[in-house]
Length: 410
Image (tube, rainbow, N blue to C red):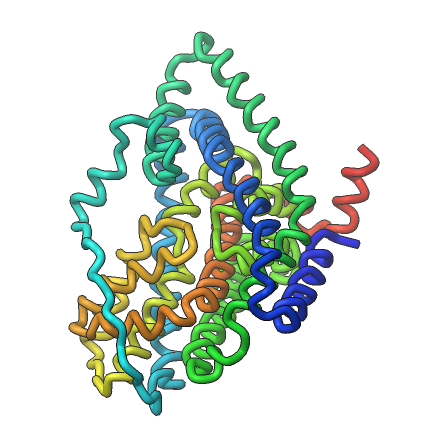
């Protein structure tokens, strides 16, 4: 049985266990917490070592620049399309219409960060502190600078390069061990989520949940598979199957960082060379937040509907620009998108109290947007590799069964 089949079984059994156990499902949560902690302990050394090697393997600054432009350009285009799809779906469904608002709870305004301040904070003062705190954007900047410096040292830096190759291989082996725990971790996390929220909270917010889910599915099936077909010329079905494992982890943990080791494995199965996914995947973890941006546009329309506010085309265009900018740098942790929603609501003058309504089902919505982010992360590696002429299409089109058989044989 394939791992993603086991994960899906764990997902289904978790929903059943949560409905049966109710609040008592909280006793299963420690199993899920241990699983997430094991995944997150891999992330920082894996990001740093693979990104350093990715930068070194590009050869020179011009190649690095091309890779960076292609990667960031792809993220900006897909994120913009995600927001537009979210707005179109929300305009059709009108997710907040007919909602009877209860008493709104107070919600504090998060401190907003200006664009220049955000750019300044990308550069770490103490890279060790950044790693200890898991500040992914600062780790990425330091890794790029370190890799660039290492590539300039030539033969002198060869032992350092070998060291990072060893670190990366060790972390991949640890990833394999942790990945085998996935079905049990997914079962525990989904059981806890279902037991905590049940079905009661879903009914009043069904239109918001439905609109977000529909928009995410459209974005995955049309934007990502369209890009895969156009640039990589590989079967969208083959792509979707190989990304199913990290997608299931994202769905259950609400964290793209937790799914990161699974995504690295999927990139290998999709025929993306290490020097490409070693660069694109760490970048995607912070910059590519299509699901988050899409959710923000749907949530903004929900709040507008709920308060009886009509948004003009100009205001909706403002939502597009703000959501794209707000999604860049959003931390890939559960609930990160809810904080960034503040910026989007403020951009068109919508009441921040609306966040208190959305917060009730944010965990459910987070499952959808994180899954979307993960499909986007993996599509970026395939598209950038294809644009660079380095995608192994034969590997990408080889079924998972054959890949696992050849791995077992070797």
